[in-house]
Image 1 (cartoon, rainbow, N blue to C red):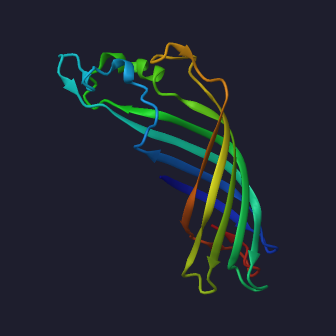
Image 2: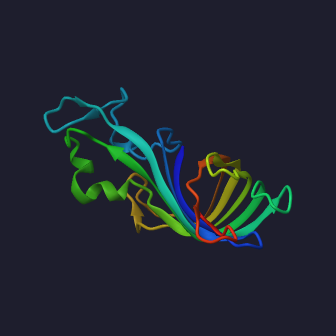
Length: 194
């Protein structure tokens, strides 16, 4: 799942420029980064030798500058297909939740050795149906989005494997995006900021 905050400027000629910040989160982590500290039975022992609940979550963000064009359905309309491309930064990691702070191997800065913090250059592409109504009441975008990230793991060593981190990787994602717009019209020519 993701949550975005964006700001775009649409010129009188329908060119679009802007910024997009997208926060990504989820609870499905494919790699069990804490497997070496898990018991044979599948649980974790805390400082008092009692079982402790430990959860893995996905966290990350993209921050991109974007440019593109709105292909309107008619000359006077602000409704049509918006095509955007962007470039910026992608960062993601595994968030390890130990609410009781009871697992010594994950206390303090030791947690960083398991989190797979990854960062690098990203490209984004959006194709969105955009509707900016003439009465300014219904303003939305719905469409497809995808990204490609050329990233490196930031940490020097992964504690669970004892090996150096991966020096380069390709991260990709795609999905459906729905955006509710709050437009600001700044002149009679209907330049739009949202």
